Image (cartoon, rainbow, N blue to C red; front, side, top):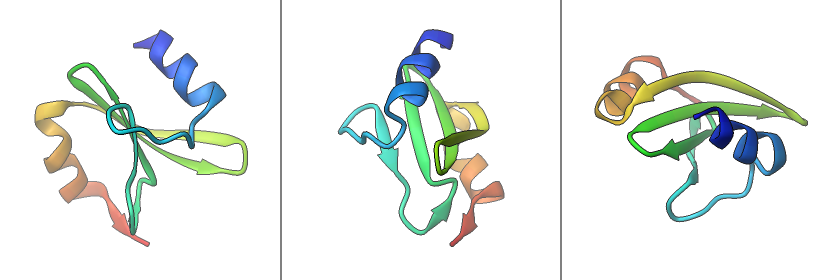
Length: 71
């Protein structure tokens, strides 16, 4: 997990892909990083990455329903 966070969020947090990083349109958090069965929700402000939550895949939808804010 730590390696994935380091690799993807430190170097290319905006680089979306079909399987790894997804831009969440119209929501805060702005992005979702997929690492195996874990989802990392985060926002970007300039060059700063703010990790909002690290949740299991099975809990991702309920976390978004509870905590995501429309932009």
